[in-house]
Image (cartoon, rainbow, N blue to C red; front, side, top):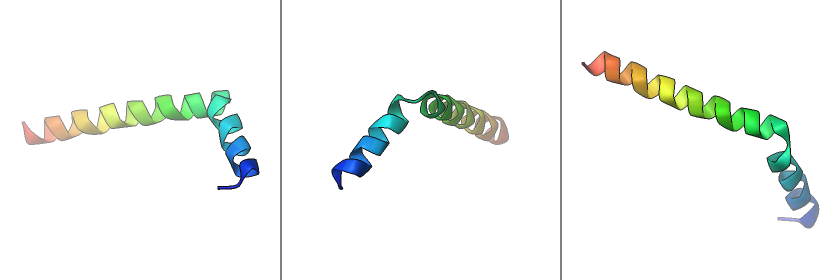
Length: 41
């Protein structure tokens, strides 16, 4: 990986958009596991 790509990634990780993305993924995971649980019970 080139240093410029690394820097770009670091910028992305530090941005609010990335945090928002993480939160969204977390919520989606929780929702999907919940719906799976409901489906199986």
